[in-house]
Length: 268
Image (cartoon, helix red, strand yellow):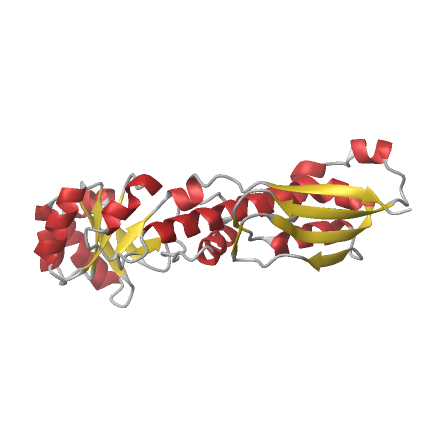
């Protein structure tokens, strides 16, 4: 948050300094202007309080719940601080609310299929913890946080290891207690993964027909995750194949910002 403020404010907000009296006070109202889930109020409030520690805050809407529109937060404090922090605070709030809203839309799309929506590591650099928290607020499930907490053998790892089966074997020997998943692009690779004892298989960029075939073939011997090119339009059909998980990179790399605004009024 401090880095975000420094990026925007630099040596000072010259517009606000030129036009707003130093002692002026104001009330501000942040309003949600489109349907979705608001998330990120804490970081938005922290942004304002970095500039004015005495700013008064009143929460007017529930965080993490679907709402159509309405007031979110009321602020009261130094006018200069509210104006200077406005864009940074709204950037955080709109971005995180957009991620939470996208997650909620995806979860709704697969309701009743039994599939779980997962996020990925395709996050904004430096904002992963916040974006993954927003995913969870929207009702989806966090996959691994980084490269350190689970093994996910991708196509390039398998190529360097000498194949899917050998990659699984090496990974098991290196970190026997770590969660393990391996990406497979063909049924032959699925069979290699099964023979090596992989507990979860990522079915990469397979068609719906291929996913159906894989689910029947694996028959519960490993958990199955569908991944690659998933959109809201294709999500339910993919989930309906019987896979256990669907990973959606768009939760974090393509979620549109939720529309929120901040309007000020002076305090006499």
